[in-house]
Length: 297
Image (cartoon, rainbow, N blue to C red):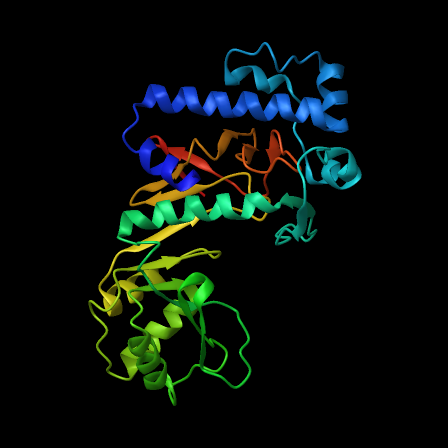
């Protein structure tokens, strides 16, 4: 349902998108007020009425939610009507990993946004296959097939000059048409392939990279070896923001949540998808700058 909505939204006017974003924002605020102890107390304390707001700017009277507050008021932030969920931890870039409760639905909604972005590179959720390079430990195996995500998972820990041709052979046999994973791992694969004089130009429709920064030397090597476009998106464990990267910066998807830039260039986000633990004006441990209507993160 989410994926179909996102595909349909590609033909919407900017006005309609803004209206839908505001509808989702107001729905999130009302739900948080009615079903969490923390936001009921906070909204009443500052005199914020979620039923009567008529634009998103009104939310700026709501105090920000920091990771420290999240830890202190964890149970008070959990909605009483959102069903089952699961605990995840943030990456802890500030040195302090934070736990958060996500509803089961959040996971699937997240993938709808991911697949929608990937579709811009020709990815088809029914037919496409991926060769995945992430930190998955496979013991002595070079690879394993994961039918859940239509992928062949490659063992990045055992990959080297002595067996790179076997990696290529397994990927070709699986007929993966996209390569997916950490920039560092995909870069290493490309470097080894080039050193072995193996030609992979045109093998993949795109390199879909996640989780790490992509450095210019990595980008140059990946494009040189694979001769395909690179797709990247920005998100985080809390599932409150989703941004798609294009040539000159990131664009935040307005149907995923709202984004403000704080005084120290930190993202302040309100996510629409996790009803179990709503995050409203949540401060993220990153820095962003705006440039020509897009963002650098």
